[in-house]
Length: 193
Image 1 (cartoon, rainbow, N blue to C red):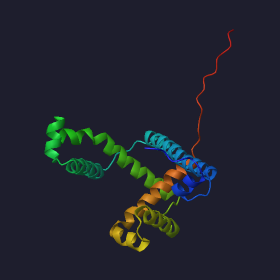
Image 2 (image 1 turned 60 degrees about the horizontal axis):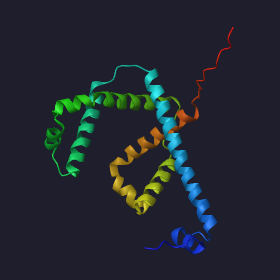
Image 3 (image 1 turned 30 degrees about the vertical axis):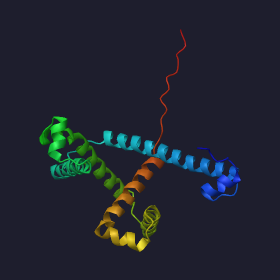
Image 4 (image 1 turned 90 degrees about the horizontal axis):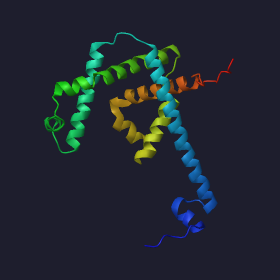
């Protein structure tokens, strides 16, 4: 197998740009977008972890149980996609359903706490999903799945509220990142006396 030459023709075939330098520039731009998104996501996770650590309050048991149920449904679905039942998965891991559920409790509590804090911050800061936000998200889904927006909207049906919730969550996390104060913890050497 012979590799094609790296020239303008290759650039045209690969991405529709006219020249190899344009292709390199476009690839660099795309890589920077991905790197910036990863970096922002990491900062968002760190900020959210700080917010979670700074707030301690009792969590509604019904919400934690609901999150545990969703997590167990995810395990069941993952086992099903691997051609197994939940029982087979549990047998392979040597756990009971109660043990698995109990192992998820801390994560479920963290998710519920994060949801409640993000909702409270969104409310306090008046962060909402605007019609423009919803249109932009529907447009992104349309491009991702290669379907017209009206089909995406119809497929979402009653899940449009979940879409709006995701928009508010992302905007709230962006708000937290944008308003975060980054502290550098540097130890300075002391001079000998």
